[in-house]
Image: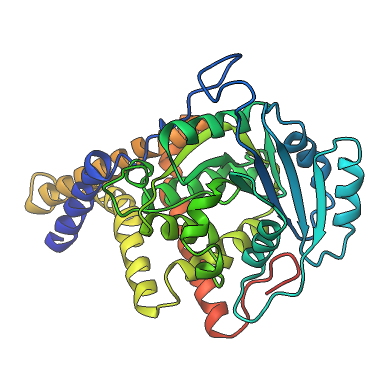
Length: 395
């Protein structure tokens, strides 16, 4: 019992640290100011040229929901969209061409076979960059992302004002189905815990991250950093790109938004499981030691407070040890567990609010963390068995 109490007290203390001193990762207040009418920005006729690069593999079903929102951007400067068909088998290129026929902004290119050592998506991004010409900014985005009409203007205005080499917004993920509402908000929560946005946005901090669905990169800064060649094998391309630019001495910015929305549907547990598992073990650099430390850390931080609460309250409810040492120990155990669980739940509230979900879901975070732990173990198991994780027809 003393060891369990000590571990529970330390877990509660860790949650207090995370709440107060870990870059305020749990807050969702890193936002861009909206651009309305003639808001401050480049002078009329001086808006820089932007090219959006959209890697797309087997995205024919979702493009009608998303591509028109990108093509219809209310942007005063030169803007065009390059959709890179990454060896699709479902008519992605044809659907894209049909959608862009009257917009006058779309170019569809077919990616050449990826050279050895290149990850598929990074190569598709490079193919789009090769066709982009001399635009000042490149907007790397995903085929499942929908945009509000003024999003691009807001991104460019902020990039010009801040002097950022990379400005990225975390897309609001879909939370309609049961499994989406249960698990998807935590995907953003855990990402922010790994890469606190305030630290990413600090010029003196070495933290670097981006959200791959919406990344506005300055072309000259990317060229000076070596282009995409240095990160050609990256499976987590957004974090790799941010790290590349920040190591090169450039500033990056990452924030939240409700104006950039992912239309990707994750209606089943299996779909979410595959989405997480495809990169979870990569995040740990395929290290069994890092995996073991992560599993132990997650269990201690997220599951122990619940176990301590239930165990302590069960002993107190028994009554047989009333007023004895076991009763006092149980009270300490329950109090430590409840304190950790309560602070943990508080940190989850802003992400739930961002997704317009009930605050009553906050105490379920330990359950969600257990599910993500299982997904991470599954990712490692598949890797070491040589099976990998299937994603859009690739493993």
